[in-house]
Image 1 (cartoon, rainbow over the protein chains, first blue to last red):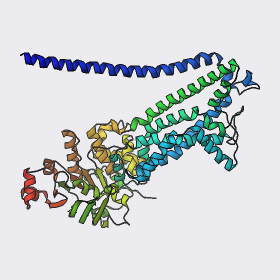
Image 2 (image 1 turned 60 degrees about the vertical axis):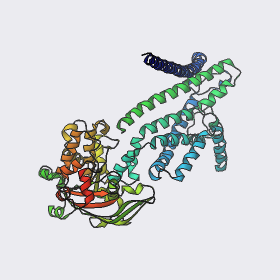
Image 3 (image 1 turned 90 degrees about the vertical axis):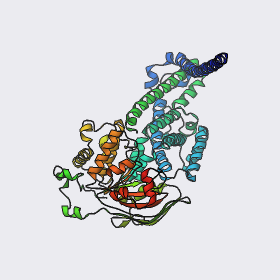
Length: 295
Length: 284
């Protein structure tokens, strides 16, 4: 009897320990999540506090008037439009280049192919290269081609920057492609190329996620476009004209000693965040539509 | 440009109702003379030094259900996948010997692999619908082989869904994702999808093992109906299933064909000791 009691006590004690363990682990997770959340809220609050009062319609509807960076009138429409052009151009270009790469890696190459291994390693390395290096690299190419700083150059360098993001995040999804799915497509008499419809539909959510990540990186990049897209007060009307971008606009206004102009930098940042938010929500909606058919 | 013309209505019993599908087609006599024929001779398959199939010699009769039975790992599925050369993707595969389908050697470099696969509808263990709507799942193959006429596609989709008894269940939601169907319905959809590209053979790799008893009975009944028009090759783990529906049985053991013949003969009067033991349940 006594023995049984002792055993019972022991197991109860163990249960209690497990219970405490669980509590501590959960507590740590909550703290970590709250810390991240607090950072984000703090950043947004700071931007709002300084940027919102300075925000007005002229900011988003006009290009900078003379002396804008010394407190003169006007807005940053040039940077908004420039950023959107660059993001749109580079995302489309990036998709066109990276989808064939992902398709080749996952459908044509065998699972343990050396080429695929090396390619994935290379994309991982490219992923980590800072954008200023891409900027410098693209700049040398542009000099070689005799190009000036231009919208085209900006799109080029941002495309280079986001291709590794595109490929690696799509590839992660594509590697999960069920073997059965490819087999049943082949069994219908499809060539490898003809399976692309099936593959694209299956990895559609991955493509959407990859695009969102890339857009976030593309719109927020300052160093890459500094050398290549340049900066201007007007809206570019062709690929060969220089283009302004929002991050650079923030940078130039922040460097001003004038507090009013600094506040405008925060408004520009606010606009940037808002654009990212809108694109993200749109992206999620589109993802939902496309992942409807996923197996 | 590949040509695609719709040749045979799925079930003989429906030939009247769906005769409209056959308007622009070869005569019925041609169809009669078209005989599905599959013959394996001296097939050896090695995967990285492992000898998977040893000296396989077989003939698969047309318009019958052929069951390939045998314990796990005896090469049943490998043999089935060799028929439509899905095995090509396996790392380190080497084959010699030949498989004749309608007088063509499928290992001949001149034989177009997609043509061979088109002749063989595949039904895998777990249903694997394409990531598309129910309608597109069936139309996909026909579109791929060059059929663009919307009206004709509609007819094919309807005929094939009826052939597998799915039409009544899904006719109001043809645009719904195929993944929303139940697993048994998905398997029937996969069968219809295979039938839509007009195969001569149906290869089924334990096609009922993932299904519930009712769905699996449904599939079995479909096989029995479909054998009027197709040669059905069924790999199965369940002896009782083979007993129920097989017309022709192939017993394999460790990569070799031990015995092959009409179902009655094999089940009632096996010639080989090994076959008898397997049927008695001495090993499985």
